[in-house]
Amino acid sequence: MLDVCLLGCGGMLPLPKRFLTSLMIRHQGKGILIDCGESTQVALHLCGWSVKQIDHMLITHFHGDHVLGLPGLWMTMGNNGRTEPVHVWGNPGLQQMIDGLMVVCPQLPFEVICHDVTECDYQFTINGLQVQAVPVEHRVPCLAYSIALPRAGKFDAARAKANNIPLHYWGALQKGETIVDGDAVYTPNDVLGEARRGLKITYATDCRPSKELTALAQDSDLFVAEGLYGDPEKQQSAAEKGHMVYHEAAQMAADANVQELWLTHYSPAMTEPAEFLHNAAEIFPNIKCGTNLMTTTLHFQE
Image (cartoon, rainbow, N blue to C red; front, side):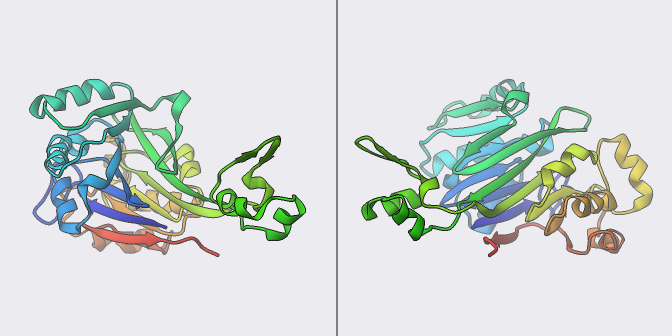
C-alpha cells in the first residue's frame, strides 16, 4: 500500500488557510517528498508524519514556491536526529540551486546528494518504487513525475514443485530473491505467476496539458494535477503563464483512464476553489479539490 498526503494546495504564495503545493508518499516506513514550498514543514507537523522518514525529494522546477521550504525542512530533520543522506532529484542545475539554499544551513548532520534527471535518467528506482519523469511545458524547465509500486505475481506452489525447488527456498523467492545452490540457480520467475496490477500516483503542477503527460498518467490510481484557475474563461491567461485550468486537468484524467483526480496549486486570487468544480466534474466525475493535509491510502486491487 501507499500512503499519500497533499501537504498543501496553493500556488505562488502561502495563505493562512492554504499551504503551498507539496506531496508526500510513504511506503514501508520511508518517505518521498515532491516539491517543498516554505510552508511544507508546518504541514508535515500538522499531519503528524515524521520528517525523519524522508529519504528522497523530487523537485518539479526551481521556482521559489516549490523549493524555498527546503532549508527549514533540512534543519528540522537534522534537529530530529537525521544523519542518513537525503537524495534530491530534479532538472540539471539542481546542484547550483541546492548550493544557494545551503548558505543558510551549512552545517547539516547529513549529506544532501543531488541527482540530475535527464533524458538518460527519466526512469529510476527509489525505496522499491519505480519513478518516471517527463518534461512538461512551463516558463522554466519543469518535470512531472509518476511513482509506481509494482506487484509480483501470485506464488504458484505447483510450479515450484514441478521445478524441483527445495521448500526452504520458497519464502526467499517469493520476496524477489535469486538463490544460487551449487550449480542450480532459482529465480522468482520459477515460482511466481504473471505480474499483477500495482499502484501508481502521478503528480504534475505548473504545466500545460500534453500527450506526454497524459501518457505518464495512464492508468494512475491517483492523479494530482494543477488547476491554477477553475473559471474556463481564464484558460488563455493560464496558458500564457504556463499553467492549466480545471477542465484541462479533467480532460487529461479522462483520457488517461485514471481512478481519481485531485486538483492543486490554486491561484491566490481564487478564494473558493470548489465553486468551479462542477465544470470539470462533467468531464471527469471522480474529481476533488485538493485541500491542506488531504490524505488517502492506496491498496492493491484484486
